[in-house]
Amino acid sequence: NISYFAVKYISKELQNDLDIAIAVVSQSHHGTSIREIHSNFLKNYEVALAAIRRNGSSFQYLSPKLRQNRTLAIEALAKDGNTLYYVNEKTHQEVYHYINL
Image (cartoon, rainbow, N blue to C red; front, side, top):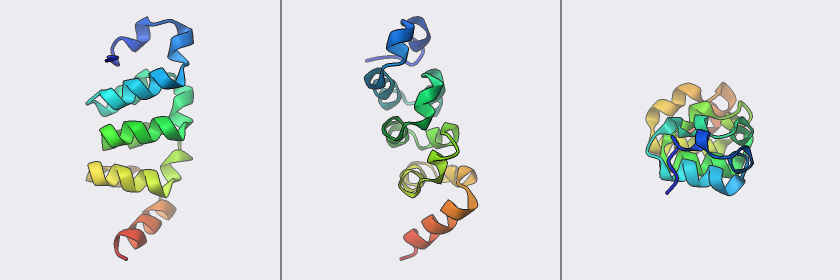
């Protein structure tokens, strides 16, 4: 178990490790845990998906490009309806259409 509080105390090399990043966001109950990992991972789909599956509010901290991803938006909305505030207009319309099929 890797606490997201502990991330800032591990080596820079480990902070840049993809497996560590995924472990941190997938084990934490806090949506803000994604902010504690290296900022490069805010652009990583695998990390984003792991974080959102644990806590939908993580969506708001993703890169703008990942917030345009329909799959991530749907995953996040399934966990936390407030995520809708962070979905851009185009993705919002796609998600709305998808949900209403």
